[in-house]
Length: 411
Image (cartoon, rainbow, N blue to C red; front, side):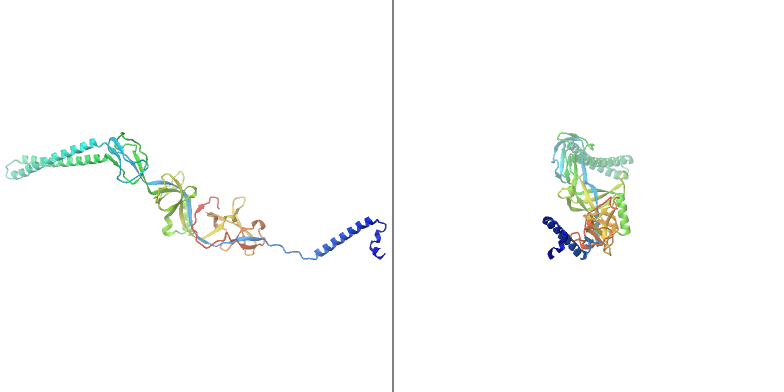
């Protein structure tokens, strides 16, 4: 009877119904107990997001710029005949290297040899007449003193002597001219270099100083690289130097590097020789000329290359990894830092250019700022965070010599 008191209200209910009702009651009581015990416990504290950061450290960076350029021969010689005649033989192989003085073509020398022999014979005749005429003039000089001959006869003898001397000089000049023309029948290389194709064949008639060159020789070692630079870039560079943001790299300032196709570096450095003072009005650019050694003949005239020209050394450059920089809808660059209160802060930037995988910052960051690299998706501006070093992208104090590209979008 006592055990049935708590369930007295179930009298008259079937045993099956009683069992179900009792089960429901126990479940309700269990839920209430769990709820009460849970309400008594403290709520866990909020989790502070963790972000990876890089501390900004100023670096000394050698700034360079890439400029388009074209290779041109150091010296070019167009081979033309200096006398008329028939080409007897071509004495070089097209596309080969020739040395200064090598014979390239042979013009038929027969008429020039005959002219040379004729001039020599005439000179010999004039020289043969000269002694007797000189002796007559000397005798008349003595005779006119004692009035054995008239003054007129003496004057005629002196005139004949001077004319004989002039004849000798004339024929000597003719012999020299004939000798020169005979030498011109051997067309030689005026410079050392690589010769191209021949524009004439054996048996062709050529004329002195004709418009068409017989062949062309180009000196390839050393070789020129003509680079174009805009006046805008030049003015920006001058302004950086005047403001003290850049310093010259001493003796190495004029050293230039080359990049070939597919960014393949040319192994030898060149020297910047001069900057042209004339600006092309159609492009607003001027020419810089550099000289490169080319012993392997890798650089060929007309080839397009990119020259890496040194601008100067930036003593306190601030570099930031590119993955940390984002852009707003207007394209303005910004990033997030952890400020002194350990909260996230947004900073707008002014960028100069990309250097490898980093941006060169003009303004917006200061030494010691902690730039967030990873974990941006878990934070918001003003939220407290816990900063840990970003190991892979951590800045170092080494002085890099890097290759930079001016960015038209970096502002």
